[in-house]
View 1 (spheres, rainbow, N blue to C red):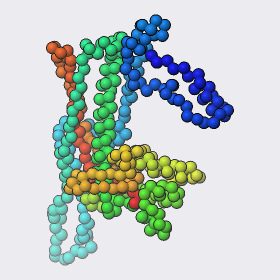
View 2 (cartoon, rainbow, N blue to C red):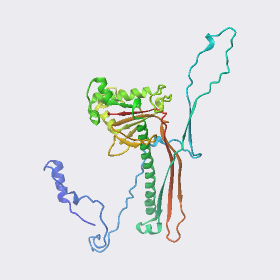
View 3 (cartoon, rainbow, N blue to C red):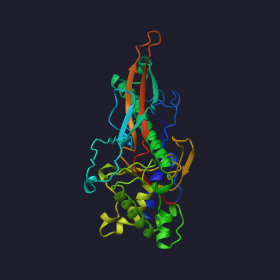
View 4 (cartoon, rainbow, N blue to C red):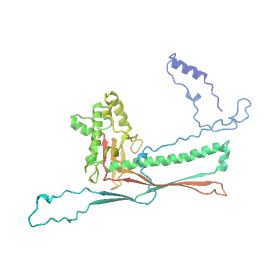
Length: 371
């Protein structure tokens, strides 16, 4: 084990912290271990006899459980059946009331048929994948001092599989939302906040993230988002792609907000507001650091499911949609383990995942951008 005397570094750090000396480059290489050492029986020996190999004193199994940030999109499990059916009856149209136009000697036919108009959607696309993993316990024993240590290690390996499943569901949730954004682009469903602000105020604010440093714009933006949230509660046909009569009560609205936009609101507007409830968004919204790709946090680029047209949208800061507009039904999550291979003494475990991700373009969805 490498021994580094650091008394000079300790003294220098103390002088810097107390102001006795100016800041200078400290040699962290003598202090920090990067964990990239390969043990050797020739060099990793104790310091007295220089013969006995130093033992590993502690093993940290590096594992943390990950939670899907888009777990709200997971609907109730669909264990039985294969196809999801959605039925919507259209509102009827009003007709003339004959009560006030009776004619002597003529009858009014009460048996005219007025069939209700019903629309049906069948969601039939399912998305399976599998995760395989091999474990050979007999050889792993050599790396641990107790059965408990080895079980902790194997538990961490299986935990990472669960993390990957959670991450996969989160990423597929992001992609499902990105497709809904792409499908909703244009028309009344896309609210370009900067352009609308310039029209309303006569300003010439530049589109993009620079607008996040303009307090007046941010107050306008949060007012518009809350206003459109109010508008969704009215029956209308303009906030969904298929022109269906829809309304979305507050309790059925899902909102996803980009964290860069949220932090700008907090630091530029809300901190100074006497009544900050007037400059806050609805409760329970999902915070998202990026929509699709970490390196392009405000953008999406997808081939739309409806027509496979490649669609790119930039500067997206928030989305409000009906809870039934998109989501995932978990059809199957099955974990199966083989018997132990008697010849090579290992076994395989397979995770079978099959989900249904869906967009319903007849449901309300609004996209807010800095364009």
